[in-house]
Image (cartoon, rainbow, N blue to C red; front, side, top):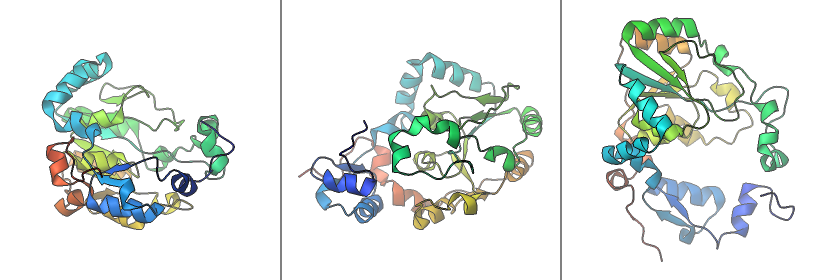
Length: 273
């Protein structure tokens, strides 16, 4: 909730509340990263399992989860008719009509969404519904699209092979339904690392996107260690020719996910003091 007395930037907020929270992170690298980024002490950081990944890392739990949701169960049932499921989940872009985020916008984020989410970056990346549908129809594949809640791009629902999800769906649950994740700068990349699905990173607008954004170069470089595409033209080529998707190296997966956590998402690796 908005509070005129609370710090307006994340660094100050964390410093004020250092005795009131603990970060649960999934690897030694992330523990060190967050400590350096926010000048946190070791008492604020614990390497601990991530229960949020349990549904799509444990088949039995995933089945229970989708059976409890009519929407997820219906989507899962529909997907069984296709030979391959591709999940496109980009993060949002701002527009030239509005400056990048400042502290006041963070306090009232959804009232600024109408200004920030209209940038049609998808078309700029050569997204073509007709061409995509033709490829999917021939291969009996399906693309599921889930845009960021702040994105205000309208994608018509014209074809059975292309499914546009509303905000009621949890994007992370798609990790248990798809064969390939296509994303850009979204944190879904890290969820996908915890699974065996293929990952395609679309960085065609990288130079523009990173302007005025505090993206850590090390993390960005890690994301580019596997399959990187620039536009949907590259995606169409891979689909049409059934080209192999370059795998993310194992050392990148291990960097962000301790192997024991992937075996047991509820596991403590750092005991609380």
